[in-house]
Image (tube, rainbow over all chains, first blue to last red; front, side, top):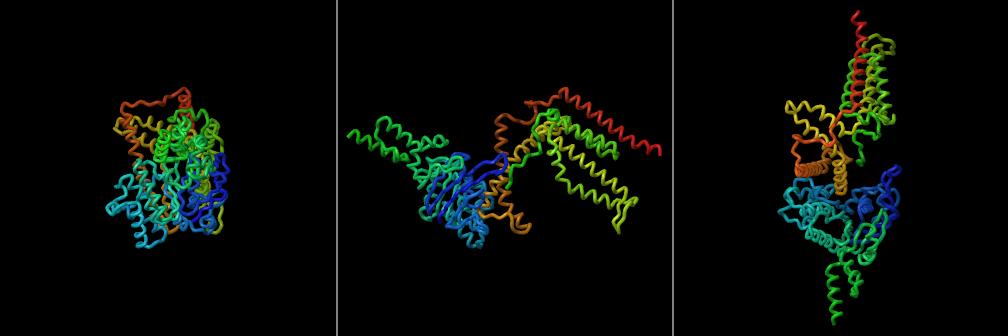
Length: 285
Length: 273
């Protein structure tokens, strides 16, 4: 399930005085079962880019190939596309509408033409995957807690069994534990179900320890595309774009400049604390 | 996709008309419309037209914007004129088979077209030179006397301005919800009318929930700033008549008196008969 984005351009209000170049010659290749963090400041084009991947937006020029097929070609079924590329918008709990959580999760698979039985089976599986128990799935979606609603909404997309799952700010508005739960779930989906996961976010710190690759966008262009540790070394340029590397990177650099020979290419608090302890012990010893 | 719908058609430019108190404009539009429909007299229409043209000139709004209002009703105008020409009974002046055109029919058709034309252009001027909020302010101030019979004028006006304010916000919300449901395979285009109406449920329910949620938040925010209705509440920009407003009233009233006179002239030959 390889995605190739080739010279993609998108102009909003093309031809008018208010024309905005949302995507500027974007080129990107995503292999199967990778987890990508798509980072950028508001207005960088990241939401515009992901909406091309499931056909909600059409490019002004350029193509997107999924498994070798041009998805904007005439005759390519959008329904087929949306069954393979699932897109979960920001605050997905706002899209819940049906009488029970279970019925709402069945909405997706039913739209794809599955029979009632098949849809119910997929829905049940999806709800299991996100950790919603039998007691909550028969309740009205409006009676759930915020975190549960979000998981129900994600289940609604998972029930369509996508091979590629894109989530726009999946941790928005969640407390630290909620963030961890969602991100752990996504990691599980990537590893166990071999789903390609793209997380759109403006915070690199959060996704750093989960993603294989970070793609940074700015003003419609891709600026960096590399493993997290390498991207964070460019933290001055990141700051110019309104982004920030994880706090530990700044701490390690500060310590290094102050004379402590620590490595600076670490991204999590645990890695950093282990490194600092190690270097201090070496110094003492 | 739902794009940027400009509410009303306010055209931003600085002119005498834009600076007039909205109450004047409401009053003026009212008597203008009355003058058009009270009389069926060519002199009246010519005067109304002259009045309209001078008002357009004063408004500094480009003519092409004003003419836009007509575009929507062109078909209606054509249809009504046809119906009037061919279906009004009276003295026949042309006949082809069973199609007949009467003198009365032509008079009717012309009257209707002129009236509609003048009416639309006139009311367009009002919306082009007055923002929706100014209009609600003007209405609120004019209707204040209704407070005496316990009509909650301020609260109604507040509801109107909040509703206007939220139209673009709710349109945006609808757009987002539509995209989210499309991403789940929803189809709003195929199927018969019943199917398509049913397909709107996944949009309408979240939209209602969103609207209620926003209303709730807004109410709390207003209460947190001590809002408790219109009682004892002052205005930041109260509507105050200026010299030019009184002049405008004078002009409007003279216009109306003049129209009455011209209209009555028509009646005089009838009285003599």
